[in-house]
Amino acid sequence: MSSFVVEGGHKLSGTIVPQGAKNEALQVISAVLLTDEEVIIDNVPGILDVTNLILLLEGMGVSVKQLAKGRYSFKADHIDINYIHTPEFINKCASLRGSMMVVGPLLARFGEVFLAKPGGDKIGRRRVDTHILGLMKLGASYELDTERKAFHLSAPADGLKGTYMLLDEASVTGTANVIMASTLAKGTTTIYNAACEPYVQQLCRLLVSMGASIEGIGSNLLTVHGVEKLHGASHRTLPDMIEVGSFIAMAAITQSSITIKDVAYKELGIIPECFRRLGIHLEQRGDDIFIPEQESYEIESFMDGSILNIADAPWPGLTPDLLSVMLVVATQCKGSVLIHQKMFESRLFFVDKLIDMGAQIILCDPHRAVVIGHDHKVRLRSGKMLSPDIRAGMAMLLAAMSAKGTSVIDNIDQIDRGYEDLDTRLNALGAHITRQK
Image (cartoon, rainbow, N blue to C red; front, side, top):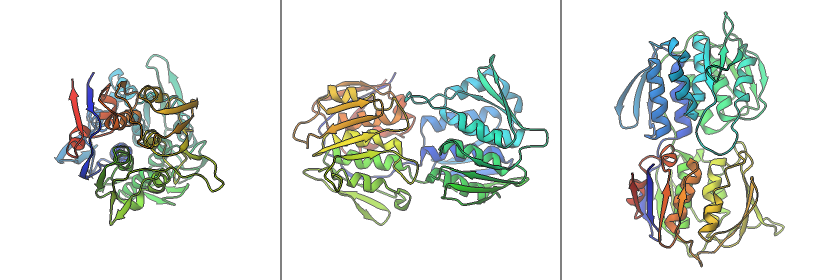
């Protein structure tokens, strides 16, 4: 198990470029299964989750070529459909959250697929009901294969059929799976309460460039007119908005001045404003964000004087993936804030480690934590930590970078799942992070 050894207290300076969007990459790479023609994807992040998904596709028979750093060619013209019945395929899917994204394409194009309960972060229950119910609306049937410990989904002999559906939740991955399956379904599919995150919008744009017919992109009401065949296309992923937010948080907690380049600012939604409410000044400079060094970061109150409440919500609300880093930043701001993580009941449990480091946090329940900021008057203490998931791991790293002394973060494979060459990139700004095997 690899670790980060972090010497805290160093100021950062310089420029950093965010990687390609992890969550988008998992969706658009899976979409290559919908056609037997070549699909080229640019700005693919070199992270563990994406690498493992590519290996899964290669195991199915997809021809994958790396054309340059972050640029890949995919051609799914010789899929071994028997491979999806094997324990190897199901076990790989069970260990990789991104494997969920191959379900819709395989079902639509080949008529069947096994859905293993996916792995990934240990942040609480992540149910698959929305995926299965949406695909059933298109005519798929499913049964639990107890021997393989997976759901077996199959399409009718004459294929999936378009229909109207109201999703039980605005699930990003659930919406993506249904959209991909609908592109090859017969007739028209209407998806209400669809997720409309930039990742889903980007997936839709790729599918349209492949010949799909999709209306309502960017809204929660999508209309997909099925086509008989999709063709090849080229696509470039957006910068990762979670990384952009993480770097804003990093500048604030280390009281540093940095520039984040090429952020696709108009796609960040409410994220910059949420950081401003924590007292962080940031400037949009073209498509870059400049964060100046500040003496103090003062958390806003609501207009009636009550404590600020920052909560996650479906897009265009705040993504839950940034609450962990925002919570850490708040520990060194001036004032108090309630962090409300609605989606996952285990995602805030990492705050125990922050409390051990001297943070003033009251964990009200599995979903809510009150943070009383130190205003950088009392630095966090160094500590030994274990990363439970990607986002908590990044939050722990930020805490360690601001702390007095040297901290150790174990299980950093979790961080590597979502952030590319993080130690190297942050050290270039002045951080002191050593990777140990």
